[in-house]
Amino acid sequence: MGGVVWFDKGLAADREGALYRRMAIQTHFVEPNTDNASLVRRYVLPLYRTGDMLFISAKVMSLCEGFYRTRDQVKPGFWARFLYRFAGHANYDEAGHQRPGNGSPYTGTGVHEPYKMQLVIETIGLPRLLLACLCSAVTKPFGVHGVFYKVCGHNIAGIDGFHVGSAFPEYRDLALINPPNCAQLCDDLERDVGIPCAIMDSNDFEPILLGKCRDFPLEDEDILRVMEQNPEGQGAEMTPLVLLRPCGKDET
Image (cartoon, rainbow, N blue to C red; front, side):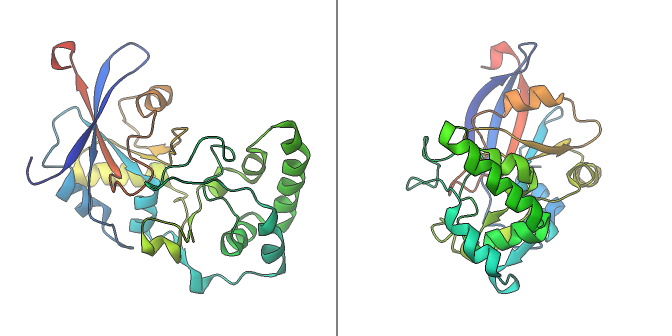
């Protein structure tokens, strides 16, 4: 449709049973400092119908808004080079999806990398990081995972990149940081393109809402329901935009 490639990610229902079709839209690899409104106009507007809602990957929004650091910009210090060796990390399959049972859903590539560990120190400070490490060490023997990221805060789990095994070479020397003003970004984007927007930082295990525009039609709980199983994708799909379309039972 309109030269845009999209994939049907199936139907999802809100708490009242209303159905929505999830349309994952494929883009090119989005370069840093791309205009987000131009991206939406190119890939979403050819498909858009009145009543549709748009979900945007936090990674793409970080690239568009310039919330990233290159490897050359980060200088790991003593603590980063020491602590990263003890960090948990997940394993991935060939498609870039996290394998179950390898760390917590929050881990991802984790901070098992001195450059990412340095970004954590710069973001939350060394005392809080040391507290997170201590809490994790105490709870992990009891099978409790994810404590490190809960103490650090979700913004740390949202640091993504410096991943030598990434399907995208660009991510091997680039780290993305979740934008701090997601609700405002969604308001601005809706004003520019006329589509209600929300920003997600999801993974294969859990949908995470970072922000939405003021008049987004769905409540937070319903957003998490309809975005389960991460229709934006986690690997090399390049489908960072998901159009959510209300549909009647006769359209299923």
